[in-house]
Image (cartoon, rainbow, N blue to C red):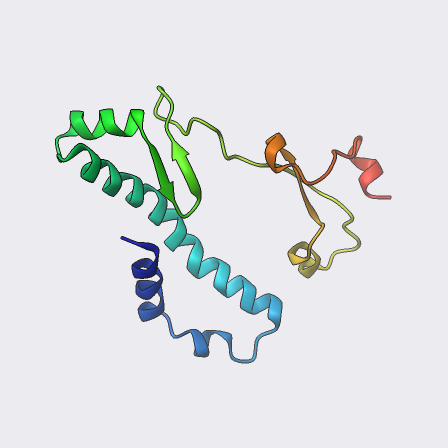
Length: 137
């Protein structure tokens, strides 16, 4: 399903105006994140499978599987290529450290500069503070 179709489906299932009335900007952002997260998460694999069936010109498991192992797919999360083990060729798991946290206000986690990406190197946004006790100062 193309992204526009996915977003239209999300919109039909949820009345956005009612969902955000009387909420702060952070609350609204959290509503958006929750609603789009499932749409985005399901779009990537669906897009890959759809492109593989079209590219292989078949729905046979072996043909589709071979196509998936040898091609790169354009998805909402970027270009995706699978390795020989069936996992993404380039891992997209982020190693993060929360920094500059003061007190116990949970809303500060939504702000910029708190979640620092340490790995992968291509997405790095800061450096590890070690030992972590130093990050609390």
